[in-house]
Amino acid sequence: MNAFADIIRKWFKSSDEADSKNVAKDRLRLVLVHDRSMLPPETLDALRAELVEVVSRYFEVDRATLSMDVQRTRESWALMVNLPLRRVRSAS
Amino acid sequence: MDGRAIVITSGKGGVGKTTVTANLGSVLAQSGCKVCLMDADIGLRNLDVVLGLENRIVYHLVDVIAGRCRLKQALIRDKRNENLYLLPASQSDDKNSVEPEQMRQLCQDLKKEHDYILIDCPAGIEQGFRNAIAGANHAVIVTTPEVSAIRDADRIIGLLHAQQLDTQLIINRLNPELVRRGDMLDQQDVIDILAIELLGIVPEDQGIVISTNKGNPAAFSEEYEASQAFWRIGRRIRGEIVPIPNYSDNGNLWSRIGKKLSDTFRRRAS
Image 1 (tube, helix red, strand yellow):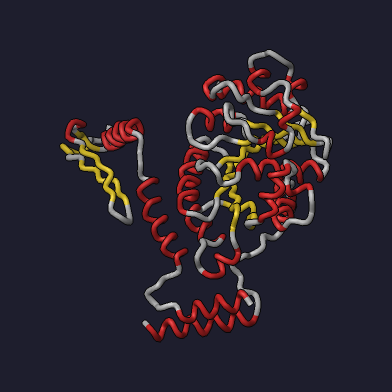
Image 2 (spheres, one colour):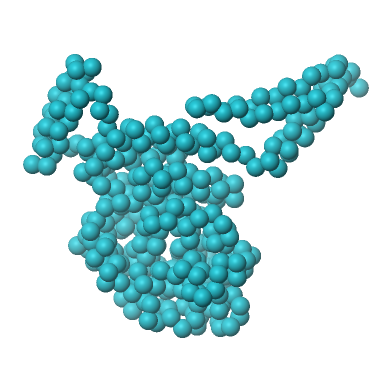
């Protein structure tokens, strides 16, 4: 009988009244994008050093000009790196 | 013997870690495995009362680590099943009185004598958590299908992966009625969000409250729905393949017809 009552309830539910579990799921997805993007500063420093090292194998760079930022929007996160190059490192 | 140490953890408190630890210990012991339940919640011990062994404590985990007694002296053998042992936590010390390295050694020693060591981890992500996971080979994360518990579970999963521990999930206190109504996240929702292997689901069951009141874990009696869930999980831990019931399934004809009609109705209304 309970199942039947559920059906009746569902039947009369208006279309903009979403199941509360879907609200929960959407809210969790957004909050986890933010939580998962939290980085300890040591990690960022290590990443910065390694990035410069890798790029320096191919280009001459001034490591002081490197800017690096983790950008978060509501639904995504991205690593933005700006590293001006001086010239191609000649193959030796 | 070369046993396996499994830490039962969650991040958030109150989701049922201790109950899960006690009941899984009970089913594994009843299946013939030698099991040690370790209460790693130093300063806030609870596993002893859930098991009904609170009056039998003489020595505890911190006594063993400090060398005030031998390991065997601190282990309490359960009278309901003699394969089951409890290593209680201290109630007077604090979590910083133990180091991860000491916990690792303690787990090594216990693994020589037991098939399974189930470690009941304290809530939180501080020293107590680091101690509890130090000696573990494997982690089982307990969550309820609620936003706060799932969020904390996600944080814990991240920390465990950083330690290279394998992880599996138990969804505790799932209410099939709420799931059917669309008012509780179902197993697929939780797995989609956490991206982790599911070890089992324990449905919400008043029997857990009753058995905890009595200090006799539900899994020692067959009458409760939750105890059957614990039996299935125990068999999976031992390597058997046991299907996980789908609690969001609207199995009967009436509810399927109803769902179809309500979907049609909703589409038209929008």
